[in-house]
Amino acid sequence: MKNNDKKSGFFFWFIFILFLTARADFVFASETETKNENTLIFKINETRQIISQKDFASLLEINTELKFEQSEYARAENIYFCPTDYFTCALYLTERKKYHIRKTSSLTVNEEKTKKFLETVAAQTDKEPTDAKFKIEEGKIINFAMEQNGIKLDIAESLEKIKKAIADNNFFSKKEIELVWKIIEPKVKSEDINKLEINTILGEGISNFRGSPQNRIHNIKTASQVFNGILIKPEEEFSFIKTLGPVDEEHGYLPELVIKNNETVPEFGGGICQVSTSAFRAAIYSGLKITERHSHAYPVPYYNPQGIDATVYIPRPDLKFINNTPGYILIQTEIKGTKLIFRFYGTSDNRKIEVDGPFVTEKGTDGSMKTYFIQKVYDSNQNLIIEENFKSYYESPNKYPHPGQEPILTKKPKDWSKKQWKEYQKTHNLN
Image 1 (cartoon, rainbow, N blue to C red):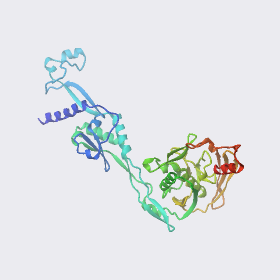
Image 2: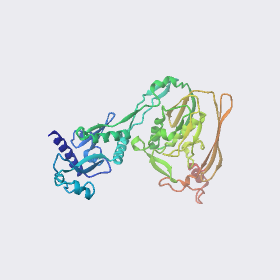
Image 3: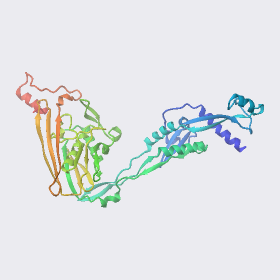
Image 4: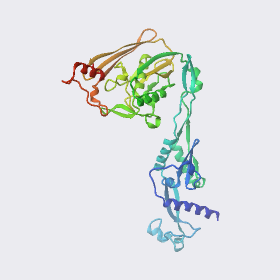
């Protein structure tokens, strides 16, 4: 009797799943639906992902098989079913055996669909670890943000666990399964504070955003805070884009002008190049090895003096440099009035840094420009270890019009006075 009850329960789920409509996407139920009999729960660490049985059914496959079963009579099966060739059946399939042919059904997991489902879950539950952050206060390094562990869903192991639960025929009775996940520890922990040996300022980078609209100022403040307290390991290549992370409305950015596709257009995060420019200048004056840097398409007044700027845009171009000092570098950011300041703290190796320039080699009446500056770095024995010439080629701002902007004049209109033309040139940076 118990065996029949178990089979009846299984066939109930079989019939339930058989008539469901398969779906390619997955809509997770809300927390208020956890007690709903038509939902299933997946646990990842302390997070619970709830999915409807209807959506989960699209991950399963029903396998049926006809075979002889002497203990029970056939129900709706084909009594003339032949599992082999005709002649074998003629000898083997007696009249009595015809009535003992039964259909057996089993559920299996569609691995491709289930993997896609788990990838969807991972996108919502995976969390990167957060390093501890430090700051300099009264000449001493102190901790101001604790580290946090990250978690990552193990898709392969979780797939095997779901397959096993389905094979054991106990998944729908439990209605809950704990997926397999791993803890990812941060690289830098609060306890590392005494190992860092950060004791001096290596270099400073400053840029002025005077005249910026409110959205641009907001984006500069938002982005600069991301870098405050960041640590760079010795010999590590620092990536501005990787450290910055996503730039969108969700992460607190507002629309502002950016240079894109031969235009100057509003986009979330406009103004972040003010941050990359200050970081670039700090790296230069700290004597670090620059591995990637790009100048802007045209001269932008916010980055005066021209020639020592760095443009970035997700996913590229990027700003990259290597920490070639003997210890960790701690980044500190500060906004003072309209000045954005990046300070790099670390361990001194008595290097000497010289920066010649920037120098303007060409300047067109249309605002185009060519510049260069040279970074020289000497070790404690006065050996030259870095000598880099950073050249910048800026096109005319006329080629990148702002929304609603009229073309910039390059010649004095006939009906203008010399005073009017001189004022126009000054306003549009054409001197």
